[in-house]
Image 1 (cartoon, rainbow over the protein chains, first blue to last red):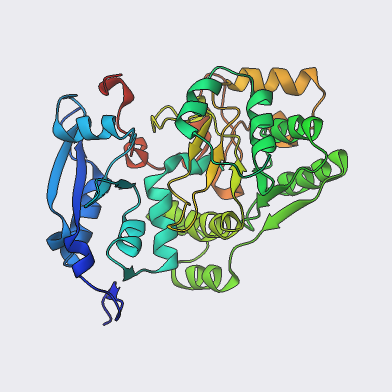
Image 2 (image 1 turned 60 degrees about the vertical axis):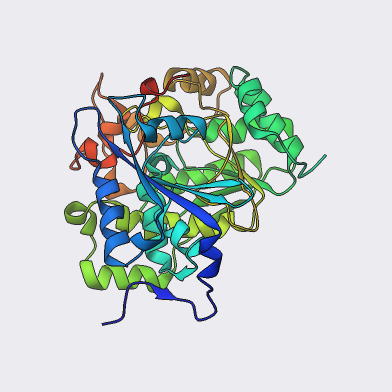
Length: 129
Length: 242
């Protein structure tokens, strides 16, 4: 069986050394885990991508002072999970779609259908398009 | 003035309380390569407003292949009424055939609507958006309080932007209520989808849309078999200090 994600042959992991990657997952206000955040965590582990994550923060909806909520506020992010990629020069890029992060930051091949599903999963407001 | 570098956060704040027409004018004045996404429902008001602002309005719709016959008739009616082209985006035949072969015609009842929507709606939408610099949607804050997703009047579209190009998204109706939309439709005698006369508020694909009764939220007319919590991705804004 082929792996779900393939590393592009020309990919240089050195590029990843020059960036700091934060993964933010949330806990719902009632204390229950976020389903989507769990899904993304599973994918990161299954695809051996957790090694690229420098830190994991929790956005606890019942605690505005939680590190993830604070980061979301500072970057005007209104959904979770999300990734923040910070370059050496301090430039930050936010990714709210897991497969987009995988494709553009980890430079791994993704499936177009899965990408589309991931976009919808992460942007339920698109239901009304 | 086209494709200028916009200060999107500043514009979102400046235009938040402005009229949909003002927001639409900003969009059409700022971008040449811009199109309106028309769902075949009450977002027809955007088409009406836009054609009063510009005589070069581009409109596209997503033909999932499973819309109501009434919606197809309505799209044609809008095309004739406003004398505009409406580009219909269809899903990739191979992708639809694969989905149907593997999971049948009603997979969404068992697996959730996301997979079917991703094939029939999101992929064609993405294909279209790669050709644009900006797009206009009829999204409103009151459509889906359950998702608690913020709908700024203008935003960088993080979902569809690429490393090479930032896509700008305008949501002129963001702050309007359903009642305001219908007030506009009645006031300006705007054509509307006949399904609205049958109790439909939110209109999507035929198998996934149903009429609602009075005092039911329009969201309850879509994917009613799914749990609301499964649609939740937002960070509750009230928990974020302003």
